[in-house]
Image (cartoon, rainbow over all chains, first blue to last red):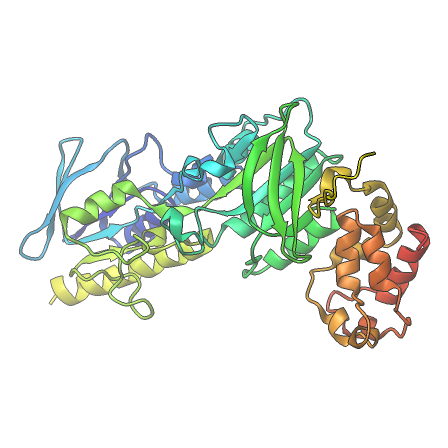
Amino acid sequence: MKNNILVIGGGPAGMEASAALSRMGYNVILAEKEKSLGGHLAKWDRLFPDQIPAKQVLDSLLEGIKDVKCFTETDVNSINLLDRSYNAMLSNGITILADAVLLASGFDLFKAEKKEEYGYGIYEGVLTNADLEKAFKEGKTFSPAPMAIGFVHCVGSRDEKAGNPACSKVCCATAVKQAIETKELYPDANVYCFYMDLRMFGRHYEDLYLRAQKSGIRFIRGRVSEVSETADGRLLVKAEDTLSSKPLKVSLDRLVLMAGMRPSKAGRAVGHQLNLTTEEDGFFSSADNLLSIQRSKLPGFFYAGACTGPKTLPDTLHEARSAAMEIDRYIKENFRK
Amino acid sequence: MIDFGFSVNPSSRINLDAADGEKFHRLAALEPDALKCMACGSCSASCSAAAFEDTSLRRALLSLQNGLSDDAAKLLSHCMLCGKCTMVCPRGINTRHLILSILKIYSL
């Protein structure tokens, strides 16, 4: 008998775990709320550190789930734990009895307009990392060509007042990648990165930083304090250059805000139904944060990816595979005796 | 002009719009390593002159990027070109050569 496994969320984590579980012979049902699979990955143009096209990664993930039953535009209306299986009612009217559930609900981008002082939604020249990536993907360029562009790290990250004291982990590398791509697109423009610390922890990330420096991108250590509009419609950005302990100002044509990761609203709604606990950062609490990150406090309910905190794409994919193994172990221990 | 007994201090805010990027460009063309500084402070920490006078290649480079070449001049004026900073720079910058190029381009 094939056990049913319900995977909630069709981003990279959900897709990779579904592929692995399906290869192990389970009957996987994948529910995704959006029209198409891929999550944030589907909206991205190129990925750090090697700048490979996001589509290439998405296509190979899709290839892996050819045999998986996928429901798109489908929410989990209700879910509850019966004797030892989960009963889930999906918004498409289908009810599933699953022996294990994997939550791969990922993250929502921090709403940059909450940081009002940065002027997102107020000044036309202010955009987010996702907006810029969309423009790259659609091949859209700014016209007239900008003379100066800034990137603000940690927007809605490391910010207690914005409700998120944690680091979002991917924004530094994304900012440096996007700054390089922007500089390539507008070689005559001055490109600035406003950072507090550069957290280039992964393999080749530091190389990316060095490459950005060599291409003439200026790194200013200091958080942008406010953005206003100049008389000629440009953006006046103020920060402290903390390396020289002096306040600084510069006029820019575009300012890109690196919006951080927040727990996904849809994921929290699922968690709420099962009384799953979250930690102070709003992300789900694992059984423990070292040995059993993939396990929740409920039997047969597992996590993968950014629903337990900000993750890079490779982290997420590793977790997905690891969750598949944990699920396999759980099913063998509990259903096949 | 009537002396009212008070004056206005000039702003100490760095204005990147007014910074002379042209000279720094010339410096970077001649010394591409000038762009590689990651502000670790090894050069200043090892500097023989810094123990006695306000001397720092790290801050001098920063001042140049911020358009404050007078500040850079002060920060390099006590350099004895001993080359200890070249030994310790983790980015492998030929700091001694870089200092000479800065002095040349900015006519310091």
